Image (tube, rainbow, N blue to C red; front, side, top):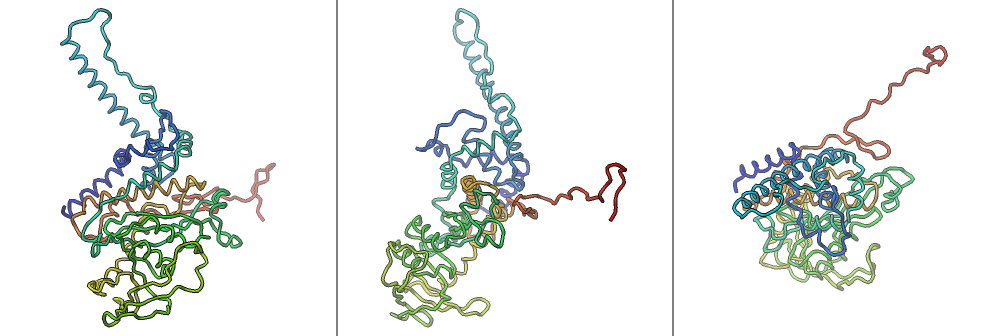
Length: 452
């Protein structure tokens, strides 16, 4: 597919978003089987059913202005459109039955009336009051939002940028998200330095896939939890056959050891000094080294976790494009792979910085709006699912072309968000209110302004 065709698809989606018809479009990516999973509570046939609620939440995550009122207004438009389609289908069915009736022998009794019969919930207008939708969001099982995120992933992505020497390339990094200042949020996400004031924050640890930019795994916790501990946990979900690009923070013995145990390759910078034993030299600035287990484990590590007594790694001396020297450590010790290939591979780690910027700013989750921990996780699941769905559309239009997240058309789907304004309670506004004009004190008896 050519670039101009991809651009046309992106512009079409942007127009759909502008015409407030995005819900019908996004709902096609919600699989029906997630509503039939075991463990889900039974749901009555409400206006805001589980599916309608999930669809509306998915649409809300794509909006720049996210109040519940806007969400309900969007669903109202779609509800009216669906009702018109349903009435048209029933009318067509009634005409077919009427024609079939003429071809049959007449029956005794009163002739059948071919009338439209729709449930009351389908024919009557829905209320624009946000109370029903608010309760439906709280009722929605978090399992459904998790299943939606899992279903949003591209499972068989492959292009000229997604793989490197038959390894699927992943990138990892962490970032902080600002939360609402409520007692429930503070309890689970305490402020790191409460004596200094500030807002509650959460740590988001994410792994993205090179070539598609989608989020394949993530963890959310308070700032009291180490990024390394979250990454150590996420590695349980990564299957063998991947290569992981990370920054120097993750140059940790526990992380290196677990990757080797799980047959996951990785490349990390080696800014910290380690006592290495050179086993073999492959070339200038290219050595196979041995690193021994440290005497003391990291503070975040669990003593019961398996740990290799020694690590065999490849140490490569590199020079950055601006002339600075640095060292890379990798588990790729295949002599047939030149060290320059590994250095060029690591230079693409910056793609995750682009993806995180898009997730936080374009998807507008730099500040999560939910006021309880459970709703916060639902909001994040749905927002990341929406991001992956957009990435899935982009991949479909560009899967036969080599491209980087820096070069695709994600910005055609969403315009840049306006400045985010926050008050002391963490409430979000699109513009500052001028407030009530402060006049001089007035004498109630004389109604004359007093000056001091």
